[in-house]
Length: 204
Image (cartoon, rainbow, N blue to C red; front, side, top):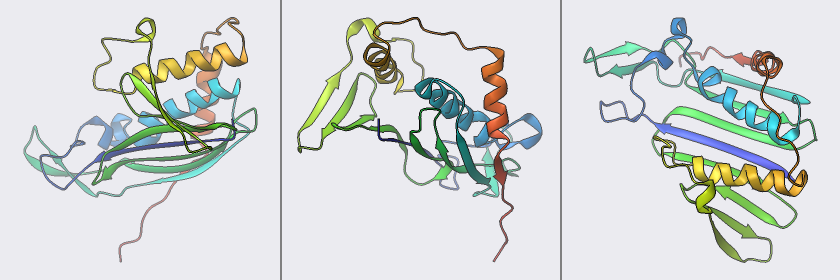
């Protein structure tokens, strides 16, 4: 692999029709925020891809929307946790990664791109992935039935993600033993999350 790009944008249009309204994730005292709620999962994925803790991670989080609509109380409430985070990382195997996560954008974007010597794999759909080769050929890779998860909830990427993981194992480990996540893995992820600095934005 040459590099990885992860982008997840959830929508907020300053109205009750937004995708991400006020809930626990907008409350710092309840453990909310994009760093803990979403970046932690991306780092977990990078540990898996790189077979170990990150060599490097640096980034910052911030609050993009100061007031967010609470559909239960029918009022706007102050957003106290980070709703956006940008990060750069390098996996244990030296793969550079760029991560862009936000709950305050106007257009929904959700994908993982893996750049290889042969082309780009883009995880975007429920039952398929896109492959764009450097020769200019585009291909849709359908997910085999045995890898599909029917009860995937609202995360439409889950089936294609499972296929990507299985393909990774088959190629690099030739069907080798799959390791189980441990407490030590969780500790390392938290240690890396602590390197993301929260930036208080100045009002202009």
